[in-house]
Image 1 (cartoon, helix red, strand yellow):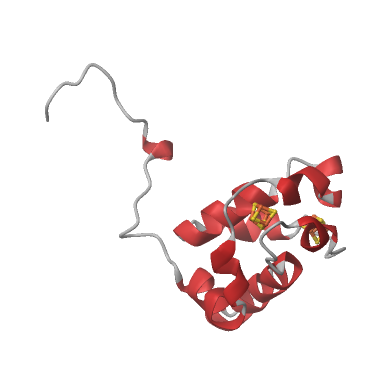
Image 2 (spheres, rainbow, N blue to C red):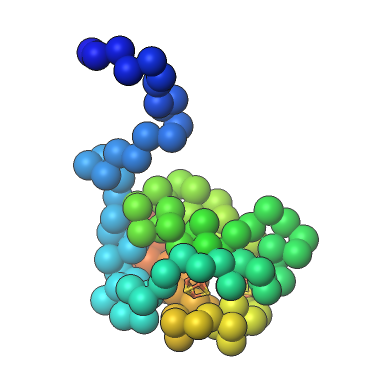
Length: 114
Ligand code: SF4
Ligand code: SF4
């Protein structure tokens, strides 16, 4: 392998081929507004769960689309489904429904509760 003078550590590598995007596809089909997310972070700034934990809906959205489901599944538990994020989204993404559908998808596709 060529030596470029730096390395990319394993946890930072995005392996799209081995990531599982079925949860994201399940949501895209049922809540098309999820495609409009520009990852601006307004939802994270107002998030109730984010005030008390390290939960970031912006990060959640990015990793969900990448198919990094182990992270997504763990973070899902922190959301209280209060809906504040949906009220502030400048792109009209129904974020609350995105999270509800993610919970549903984990049960239907993976056969276990979140
Ligand atoms: S506020 Fe809306 S557009 Fe911005 S990161 Fe959140 S979901 Fe995406
Ligand atoms: S619905 Fe969940 S992600 Fe949205 S503001 Fe409430 S706790 Fe945060």
